[in-house]
Image 1 (cartoon, one colour):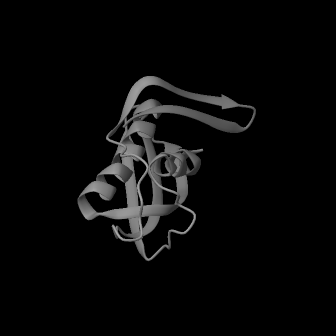
Image 2 (image 1 turned 90 degrees about the vertical axis):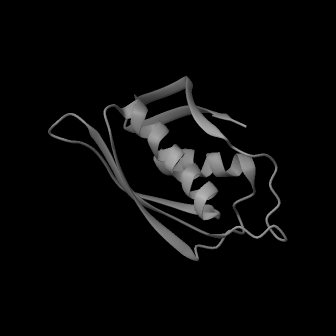
Length: 119
C-alpha cells in the first residue's frame, strides 16, 4: 500500500512509466501513528523531489513495523532520475500531503490508504 500510494502521488504530477531508477535513496522514518507515517513517507518523497530534483518511478518498502515504544517505522528505497525539463513534462505540481480525508484501514490482509494531495 505504501508503494502504491507513493506511485500514485508521483503519477499525479507525471507519467512515471518511462522513469529509470538511476538514483536510489534510502528512506527510514519513524512516526507516532500510522496516519503520521503515511503523511511523513509521502512528504519525504516530495521533499527529495523538490530539493534534490529527482523524479521517482520506483518505490520499494522493505518493512513497516510498530516499535516497542508504539511508534511506527518504515524502511524502504525510492529510485528515479534527475529532473530534465526537456523530457519530463509535468501535468501539475504536488505541493503537500494533507490529513484532510486521510484514511488508513486494513481490509482482510491488505492495507488501504487514502490521501489528499494539495496541488
